[in-house]
Amino acid sequence: MSAHKPLPVDEALIVAATQQFKTPFHLYDEHRIRQSVWQLAHAFSWAPGFRNYFAVKATPNPAILRIVTEEGCGLDCSSFAELLMAGRMGLRGDDIMFTSNNTPIDEYRFALKLGAHINFDDVGHLDYLLAHDVALPELVSFRYNPGAEREGNAIIGRPAEAKFGATKAQLIDGYALARAHGVTRFGLHTMIASNERNADYFVTTADMLFQLAAEIHRELGISFEYINLGGGIGIPYRPEETPVDIDRVGAGVERAFRQHIVASGMAAPRVFLECGRVITGPAGMLVTAVRHAKSTYRHYVGVDASMADLMRPGMYGAYHHISVLGKPGTASDEHYDVVGSLCENNDKFAVHRQLPSVHPGDVMVIHDTGAHGRAMGFNYNGKLRCGEVLHTSDRQFRLIRRAETYDDLFATLIEDVDGE
Ligand SMILES: *Cc1c(COP(=O)(O)O)cnc(C)c1O
Image 1 (cartoon, rainbow, N blue to C red):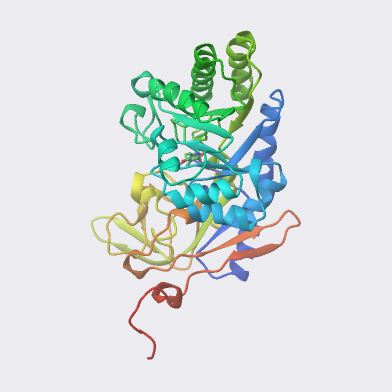
Image 2 (image 1 turned 45 degrees about the vertical axis):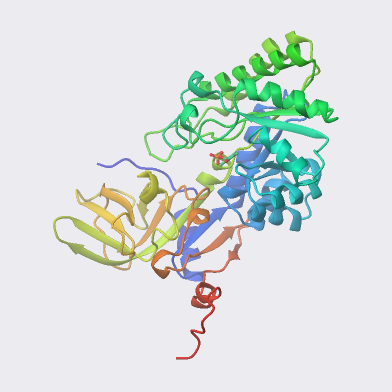
C-alpha cells in the first residue's frame, strides 16, 4: 500500500477544471494561499512590524502576488524581472525587499528607484555602487553567511560552500564603511536553509542572527531597523511528513528575541521573513493527463506534462506525490515511472512509484507544485510550458497565465521561421 495524501482541493473541483481547461496546467487555490499567510502572521503577531516578504521567484505571477500582498506580505525580489513585476504592480519602498547576488548595477539602480530595501550579498558591492556614481541607500543591510558554524541542507548546500553572503568580519567592516559614507539605518539578513521542516532550525538561525546583531551593536554602536531571517520553511511533500509547526517557530524566535535583542538594550528591530514555498507550495498542483503506458524493463506512464512544467523531480530528485483522479485507493501493486516527453532521461515526475493501475486518458494530479514549480520551467527540446489556473475564493476558475505557443518560442529568433 502506498500512503495517501489528501488533494489540496476537492477532487470534483479538479475534474471541473479539466472540463474547462486543456491539460496540462498548474491549478492554485486562493483560499489555501491566504490561510498560509494568516498562519505566519499569527505566529509572529508578538513582533511589532513583522512582515513576510513573499519570494517572487517561487510563483512569479501577479495574480498570485496580488493575493499575498493583499494579506500584508511584501515581495522579495532577486532579479530585474522580479523587481519589474513588483514595480508594475505599483509596489514601492517598504513593500519590496531586494535580496540578490552577483548583482548587476542596473538592478541596483532600479531597486533604488523603487525605494526597495536592499540586502547586499557582499560588502564590496558598496564600492561597486560608488564606482558607478550611485549613492548608497539610506538603509544598508548585508546578507550573513555563517560558514562552518551552521549545517545547511541538501537543496541550498552547506553555508561554507554556498556562494551567498558575507563573513562576520566582512559584515563589521561593511557596516563601518556604510556609516563612514553617511548611512544611518541598518538591516541584517541571512538565508541558509531551503525546504527545512525542523522548526528548531529557524529558532537556531534567529538565535544566531540576534546574537550577531547585538554583537555588532556593541562593537559599532549601530542599531538595526530590521532583521530578516530569510525563507526556507519547508512543506511536507511526502505523505508521511508533517507540516512545520509555524507557531513553534514564532514562539522560539520570540524567546531568542527577548534573550538577545531586548536584553542588549538596543532599539527593537522589525522581524522579517522571506518565505515563498510554505505560502504557495501546498496550494498548487500540476494537473496532467496520461497519454501512453508502456512496459519494458519497467512500467512507464507518459503524461502530457514534462520537466518543462515542473523541474524539481528531475533536478533534485525531489518527491512530489501523485494522485490519480477517480482512483483514490491503491488497488494495484503496480510500480510506475511517470515520465514526460523530453529526450532527457531525467524527465520523470516519479520513479518506481506505487500507483493504482493507470491507463491512457486518466488524469493525474502532481501535488505541491505551487512554489518553484512552473517558475523553474525551461524550453529545452522546444517544449512549451503550460498555463496556470487560479481557483478563486468565490469558487471560480480563472486563467492567470496561458500556455506558451510556438510563436512565443520562436519570438527571439532572428531568421524567419514563418510560413508553412
Ligand atoms: C528562494 C529564496 C527565498 C524563498 O525560499 P522558500 O524556500 O521559497 O521559502 C527567500 N529568500 C531568498 C534570498 C531566496 O533566494
